[in-house]
Each structure stands twice: as structure tokens, then as C-alpha cells.
Length: 201
Length: 201
DNA sequence: CGCTATCTTGACACCTGTCAACCGCAGTGG
DNA sequence: CCACTGCGGTTGACAGGTGTCAAGATAGCG
Image (cartoon, rainbow over all chains, first blue to last red; front, side, top):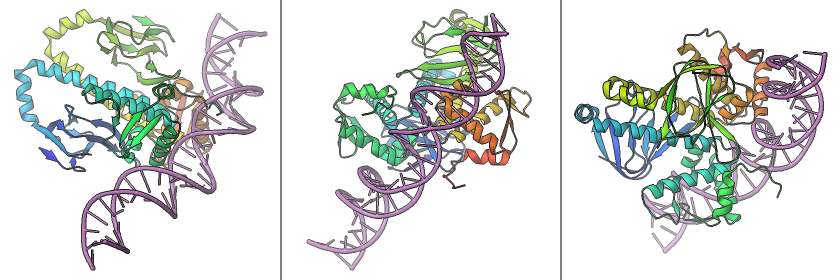
């Protein structure tokens, strides 16, 4: 199946009829709760599997943030393959573990106190993921907009913008068209990862 | 096996020889990275299963925060049971899903901006878990110290203390011996859950 | 009965959220 | 070809919250 940019794939609480496997494009998984603010739980890329359900209901909403093509796999056919192929089950376990690891890294990003750290960690994540998909690694591409980043790392849109600014003026990053980021000063970049006491400057 | 309060059960990166199943007590799972600050990823209670490994290495350190008794299950014997009992595998999947859900809630706590919200959400989590273990629910018991709470919800120790203070003076909580919390004004308590704009007061 | 670990509280600078205005760009319609 | 509008992004102003540091209070434990 195919989704346009911005299309909702399913909504939290919908009855879960299928799981999806991304071929192309990027998807965000988010939940809004309980205030009015929504938290983005994960970004999903090529080869990622999603559509996990709890008691027949999806646990988060998903939306395409770029044009997306994906396999849509009805649960029925999934059950079939399950009983026939034990290795598949193992594959699912592996996916779950991967997702858990990812959630761990996400938690780390959220737990950072300064926005620059959050952003740095976030860029590192993207870089790793990009490398894992063997795409060029000389610069990081951001498929999502600033607002999405903010909701993922747990700050306001403005803070993200400011963080980008401070990192660029310090000569650590270079930004092209708002979506291509090049890490110039890798050394201090990684240093930001550590929680930097407010060293007066 | 049995652990004293404060005992390390294993450390991140150790070669994983066994998984554990808690009978009594509370365990914290944490990772320190990459700064000097450690983030507590989860608290583990009775019946919880932990010791998940990635490539033969534990992915987080664990420490008993109360006296703990637990089953220690060597991986070898686990493999045995795996091949004999397919239902067990399913049980493990269920545990993983549960853990993922829990991570999701954790992320939500971390993403909250004001400390009072974090604390409120945290208390709600504990309350739910406590109810799920059918323990008395009229007040919440905190097995961990303030510092642990701070590291779990992603703020400083001082902020937690202050948050407790503000909630008590507002007549929302009552604290006994620093570790027993009673929710007095349930209504405004839940209201704090929603991201409260800095409503002048 | 001291001693240590834990918790509270104060002071202060800094960061961050909120609000709002502004910019640049793309698409639209005149 | 050019205004107009909408969207995403940046920036400024300001207040309030939070981190850090450090001192003081409390409780737990030997």
C-alpha cells in the first residue's frame, strides 16, 4: 500500500487489523496523552515493522511524514505463517528487542536536561540509523520537521530552533536547507553528549 | 538467590549467564551513559523478569534497592525449556510487550515539562502497579529513595523534593515517613497530569 | 549515643516555555 | 507578473521553573 505525506495510517485505539512493513519513506508513531500534548514515541524507517497491538487495539497512532510505500500484512495471514514457520517468531522477538533498545535510547534523550544535549543525542541516533541502512554518512538528513523533533526529544519547538542556532554559531554544525546537517566539529559534538555543567563561558 | 539492599546483581556489559525472576523486593535497572549521570530505566517488582541480553551482554546494570529474593535461571536451562515448551516462548513475548508498554509510559513521564507533572505521573504508575499486585491501594508506597525517583523521572533530586513540597502544601498529598504517600485531592491530582499552562495563581 | 546517609531548604544564575512577531518560500488566483 | 495567503522556521521578550551548589535538618544504623 501507499501513503501520501501526512496521511494517517491508523489511530490509537483502532481495532488492529494488520501490521506494516515499510519499504520506503518515514513514519512517526505518537500518542497523545493525557494532556493536549502529543509525544512522538518513535520514527520508523525502511524495513521497520509496526502495528503492534494490545488486546486488538493499536497502542499508538501513526502518520506518514514522507510519502510511504509499505507492505500491509493482515493478521490472519500472519497467524498462518506463524504456525508454519517457527523462525518467523524468532524474527519477531528480535524486532521487539530492537524496539526496546531504541526506546532505551529515546529515554536517554528525553532525560537530558539541556536541549543541546537532547539534540546532539538525537542527531547521533539518526546518524547511526542512517549508517545501519548504509546511506551516505557524511551528513545527516532530517526527514521530519522541527516540530516533530521537538515532540520526540521532549521540548518546545522554539528550544530546538535555538539549539540548532547555538550549535551552528559555535561552529559545530552546518545546516543546509533546514534538513541537511553536517557535523563539523565532531569532537566538541560528542562532548555535548555528556552533561555539561553550566561552565561559565 | 538472595540479595541485600543495595547489592549489585549484575553490571552492564557483563556476559549474560542467567535471567532472574523476582519473588520479593524491588530492583532498579539503570544505565550510565554517556555523561556521568545515570538514568534509571525501570523499577522491577515481584514477578518481573529481567536479565535481557544483547549479544551475550547485559544491556543495563541492576541493583537491589530493597532486600530481594529471586529465582536465578541459567540460560542453558532456559534453552532446554524453550525447545520443550512452545507456550513459554509466547510468555516471553508477552513479557516483552509489557516491558515495551512500560517504557512507553516512562517516556511520557520523562517528556513532561514541569516536575509536578512528572511526579504525578510517576505516582500514578506506582499506584497502578501496586493495584496490579493487589496490594492495598489507599496509599502509595515508595520503595526507592528520592534520588532514584529523580533519576527515573529525569530531573534533579532537589526538584523532586520541591515538587513533593508544593503538592503537600497545596493539600493534594500527604506524606508519612517520606515513603508513604496518600493522595488526598484526587481531582486536582489528576489535573496535574495534563500539561498545565503556567496559569497565574 | 554519635555517625552517616538521606532529605529538605535557600540562593542564584541560567535555561526553557510561552507568546507573538517576523521571515522566506511555495502554491494560488487575480 | 504580482499580491495574497499558509506553512514552516527563526527570533525576541519576559517570566517562571529548574539545575547547581551548599548548608541545615532528619532519620536510620551501628
